[in-house]
Length: 166
Image (cartoon, rainbow, N blue to C red; front, side, top):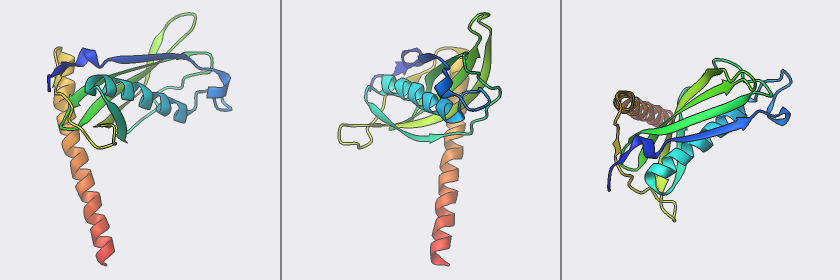
């Protein structure tokens, strides 16, 4: 498979936060933010892999600042690293004032996607080519996070096996 640069996966969604997107306090619903994060990340993963993708996981997500009804939400995503059939996608979320255009980072997360063929079976994805210093840092850190994720899965499976035998 031909390696692809990170820039070819970059995706962005810009939306106006409308009243039906908000909670009683006038802030966007956290689930709506997560939904849009999943969409923009899936677009990035699909662009990189050239196939349909399924969400495997979303890492820790903190909401650092609220996004108010009437503001603009901007979500940016790109593939940080590709493994055999999976990819880590980084997503950053911003709010922007309609009149002053001031932007503030509100949340970030890493999502893992698996590329699938028409039958839903995992398929191989091309390697990622990081070009900038920032992309190279994200690439390295994605390898560390993958190691941590795999250790977490092994630990969970071990606990489940112990519970079944006791």
